[in-house]
Length: 294
Image 1 (cartoon, rainbow, N blue to C red):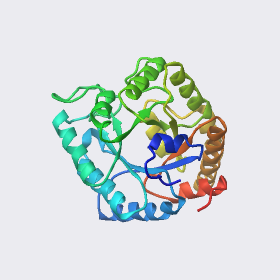
Image 2 (tube, helix red, strand yellow; image 1 turned 45 degrees about the vertical axis):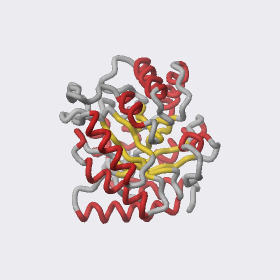
Image 3 (cartoon, rainbow, N blue to C red; image 1 turned 135 degrees about the vertical axis):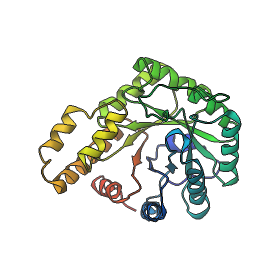
Image 4 (spheres, rainbow, N blue to C red; image 1 turned 180 degrees about the horizontal axis):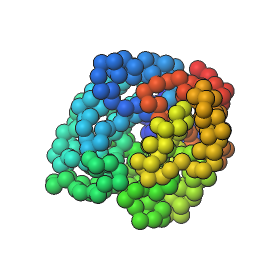
């Protein structure tokens, strides 16, 4: 499942072999960095198609993101995808960041519009001399990089309709995007709906669903609310039955994630993208439930 020479990421994902990928975030301190590298080391034997490193709100973690992504490229067998957002950057600054990625041996980037400093629900304001749409960033990066983009199964907070989201994804594809990754998916039907709407709009690139196991209801609820999409009622109901027992909540969350993964793959998903929160245990437990071994 590691990347083959001369094959694009899109070809790799579409090759029929299931793709697995992991997302990490830039650590804030030395202890966090140690935890991140422990997770990377524990997940590396699974041979993911790629791993990605996120970019802080408003571009706040730029240097750490580039450094960590470059370190993954040079010190591991993994294929890193570096995140990049339009927020707070001029076109010239974005070109410099892309140069930094290229110098670090990184050839894949995830091009995002990004959230405003005030969070995903805040009003979007373009940076003077910068970009307004992710598709512009894709256009800038795609001649030199293999570019991934984001997709929203339940709609982007700034979007007026799910159909508009599909049209935006098509614009990113036209600008050179090779594949897309969704934000957190909690129901297979939400992902399948996104794929169907996208196909109707002319999208042909593979779309990977993002998986976030519920280990702690409060934490995932906060993230879901921040994106403007509360957890589905049936998910909350299942977790609520065991909510007074943290161990049972975790076990139920892992079981639900494994069921979701099976339903997504059965529904035609070309692979699975795991939001790891810089820990490997939950992902390894889901893999064990899916009978995926090193």
